[in-house]
Length: 157
Image 1 (cartoon, rainbow, N blue to C red):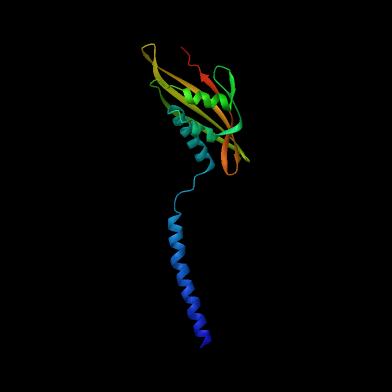
Image 2: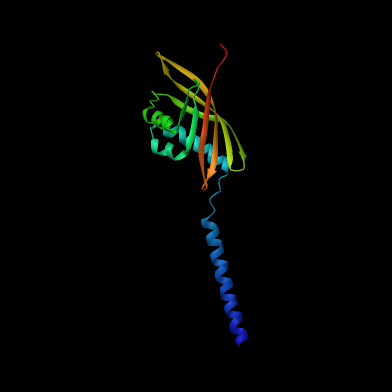
C-alpha cells in the first residue's frame, strides 16, 4: 500500500513538472542577442540619442575614462562628448550606419562601422561618410565605451 502511494505521488510530481517546464520554456522563447548584436544596436541607439539630444542615454554608454578623437583630429573626454550631445543640431541631416565589423577580445570589443550623413549645406544637399572605431569594455554585465575615433571618408572628385 505504501508503495502504491509513493508511486502515485511520484507520478503526480512528474505530471506537474511536465506541465510547468514547457510553460516556462514558452515564456523565455525570446531569441538571445549576441554581444555583436547588442553592440551594433548600441551604436544605432547612440546615433539616435545624439539626434534627439538625449544626454542621459549617452551618459549611460560612456565609461568614466572615455576618450574621443573627432574627425578633425581634436580630442575630448566624457564631459566634452556629453556637452557635444547636449548642443548637437542635426539641421535636417539624416543618418545611416552600416559596414559593421565587431571583434571581441575577452571583456573588450571593438566596433568598426560607417556613418553616412545627408543634409543641407549652402542650399544644396550634401552627403559624406565617417568611419568609426569604438572600443568597449564589459563591466558589471554592461558594455561601456572607453574610446571612439572617427575619420572622414574622402571621396575622389
